[in-house]
Image (cartoon, rainbow, N blue to C red; front, side, top):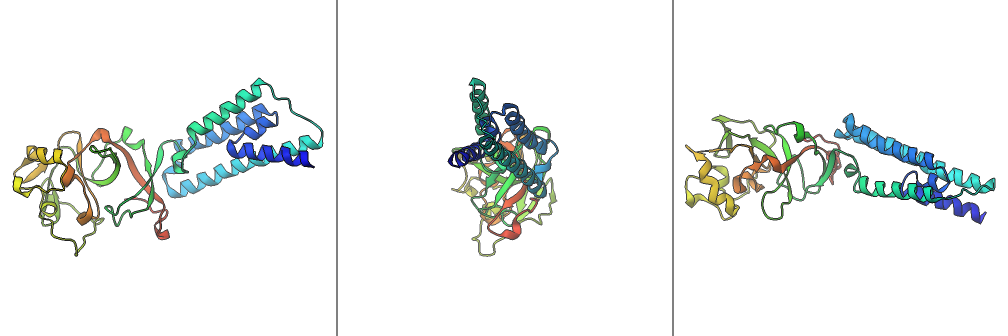
Length: 299
């Protein structure tokens, strides 16, 4: 009985560490390889068909993955126990150790991290501020498509994930307002692009926020209107792109702002974002303290 428990527990623990490793322990090398390969293939297939690019698809992907995982785990334990009962002891050769180590290394290198981070093509991020309210709140966890902009150009209204061009290059998320070549200005909190006021149903204003002449009437008319909160490099460059009271977005750059307009440090204060800094498109919220927000598509 002790041997039976020992073998079953060993197969169980190895399968927990890496799916397919329990089969290798039982001497079933091909079964372990194909089991692990099938699970890895499921990850790749989910990305190929865009399954994980929606919240419902993510749930389906998790259910399928867990089902396959539990099948491999149960099969490994069942086989280990049966081998003890029939008195069969698998022989472990150098091939067994090579296959087991290979599966372990592949598992560690490709499927580590949080659940969304384990899927090719998407990545999870956690909001750390309220600059994107009401669309995104602090502590919201979102999934972003990190391949989308390899074949698409950012469009006005997109919520983009990008590397902040200054400091230690933290990851930011903002909404695209101006495209390369667009003329942008803000008059009494109303945003105009190429002379036309744009509709912004996604923004929120804070009546209690202190007056901000710079952010509410942009771009500045002269040096005296510059703010201490501006990124120094942008303060030195901003007037190069201002013509007739409008800011012209430079080539290959994008002007972006937060939806929580009165509490957002954005392109008004540190300038447009270079195209090569943009690497993700926000898709949906997969976790939030406000449970009613879970599963919302980000628009």
